[in-house]
Length: 234
Image 1: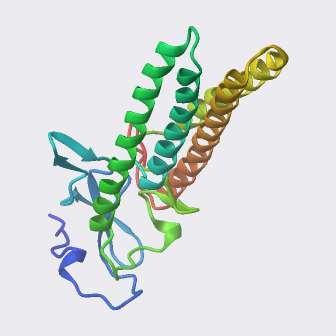
Image 2: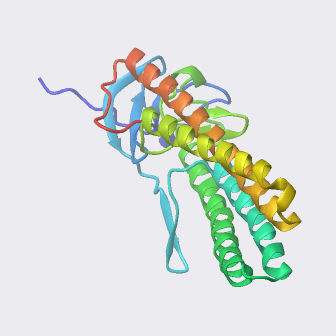
């Protein structure tokens, strides 16, 4: 006997403000949506009608990453570019390499900030205003905390933990090297070492936090009775 699929999407309904209505909502796979019946998740899945990328100026902008995290990363890159620019202006043998690093880092930072604006627009399409949807403790796509969407996109908790741990170790190594060479280094070298250590420490902390929330999302899917996708989550 065939199972009848839900026929109406949440965008076709006019819910009252704050009402957790039934409908299609972002699922564990960013390219799909799962049906929420108002109380629990069902087994019905469909491809998401909302694009994850937008073409503009010959580039496909957007993606499944959190926009706030991209703003943080872009800002850190711009700060790092300011430090390398000071090294380039200071002259010496590192002048040319520092100038090249400044150009690359500033360009990447600017691209991340522009991409974040597109991610915000795409996220607004996925979560229409006035639609409450599933309660926060039941959502499968991501976790919102401190204004950041954690566990977004394809990936798994072990990868986030490993990346966060490795980057944190690199930050500790940068701190040790900076402290050991402090007395014999110039102010520009100290600034570079301190900035690199700070950026790596922040990125490592973000990776570890993201891994923790991915574990939480895995637990939510387990409670909802949704089988884990092979090699992916959130």
